[in-house]
Length: 199
Image (tube, rainbow, N blue to C red; front, side):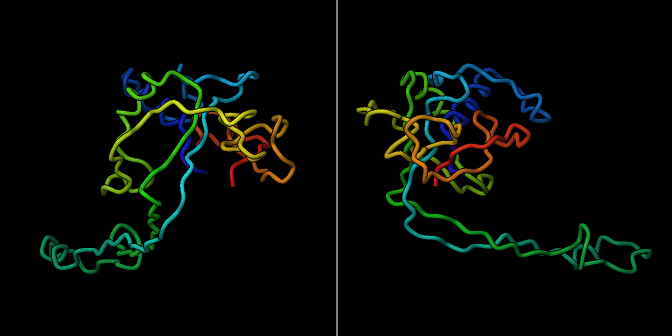
């Protein structure tokens, strides 16, 4: 699933309040964020990221175990270093990096622009492999926009822009259905329910 705006804003709110990361999903606290909730109160009126993919790049995560250093640090009891498994195993894992058109991601929401802008300032990286500099955010821009009609900002052209309950009005019959979580944290799989999701 693309990155959800309400999850980013809720993470930033937790940083501002100095909240510690929860040990498990059951310990997650629903923090108030400056994004409006739906009439049913089951989800926030914020979309997932919208973007166009320009290119893909294949990279690898490499780790070669330093055998010579291990031999040098070992003592006379060291007879064997197991390189085919365990903590000494070397690896080369393929990874795909995605490049976006104009390096831009867009979200739509109903909320307080000033507060959202302040909270998004806490978010410096998006996606996986942030520790090695991937997904760095150059800047955030929060601008007002004209609503496109019924379903704004979560349904556009009868297609959902975020996970929504199956009975959401305005969603077409051809929308993709899957098990998904409606509110952050989205990694809390025990909260999954039948939803319509973005393609």
